[in-house]
Length: 313
Image (cartoon, rainbow, N blue to C red; front, side, top):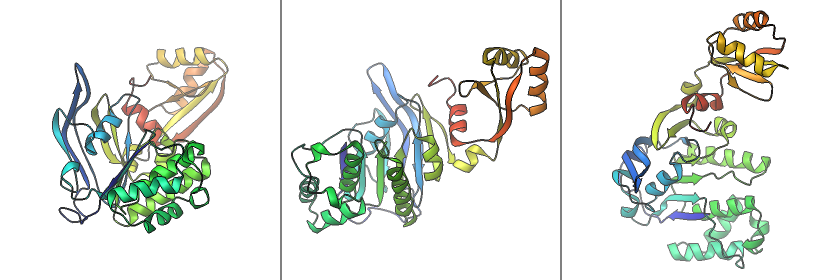
C-alpha cells in the first residue's frame, strides 16, 4: 500500500466550486501498449466519485499519473489547478492510498505514522489523532507485520490523513475490510466529502460503490465510457430477470426471439428491454418451464456491465 500524503499549504488556486482533479486528454503508452488513451474527466469537491472499469482498464495507471508517480505520454492531470509535482507541500492538499504494501514489518503502526509525519513536517500529535479517526488506537503498539489486510488498509488511510488533506485518492480501499469496516469506510468518506472535500475512489465492489459514490467515472481499455451521477446511469430503469431449470434451452429461445439475455446466476438471465408477457410467451412456445419471472430495478452493477459489455467477459 503506497501512502502519499499531501503536504500542507493552502490550495494553490480557485474556490471549492472549482474541480478538485482535472484530467485532460490523458494518454500513457508503455511501448506498443496504450494503457490510457485520451482520457478526460473531473472530480468535484463535495462529492465521492467512483472510478470504475474492468481489470486492465487503466485505473491504477491513471491514479498514478494524477499523483505524479507516472508521467503521461500526452495530456495533463491537475489537483486543485496544479500538477501534483507543483503543489506546495502536497501532503496537506492530497492524501492517497494505492495498492502497494510499504510497511516495515517490525515497526509498530504508531511508529510507521511517526516516520511519515516527521518526513512531511507534521506534529507528532497528529499521529494519535489519525489513529483514532481510523479506529486503530488499540492496535497502534503492535508491529505492522502482524496486521490483517483490513488493518493495513486502515493504517494506509491514516497515513493519507496526516496532512488533513482536501482531496483523497484511494485505490481499492475496501479490500480486506469486514462488513463493519466497509460500512465505516463508506460513512467516513461521505462525511469527508460533505465538508467540501473531494474523493476519487477506485473499487470493484459495485454494490458498495452504489451506496458510497455520488457519481462515477467509467473507463474501458483506457478510455472514458461515461461520467455522471449514479442516478443518471441507472435512470430509474428496470430489467427483467427470468430463470428456468433448463437454463440452456431458455437462453436459446430468448436469443432466437431476437432478445439479448445476459447470464445472471446459475439458472437465470437478465433480459434488458423485454416485457414480462413477451418473455413468458417465448418460453411457452419453446416448451420451457419458468421457475421465476420478475422485474428488478437497474443497479450500478447492471449499468456498469452494459457500459463495458464484452470487456471483462
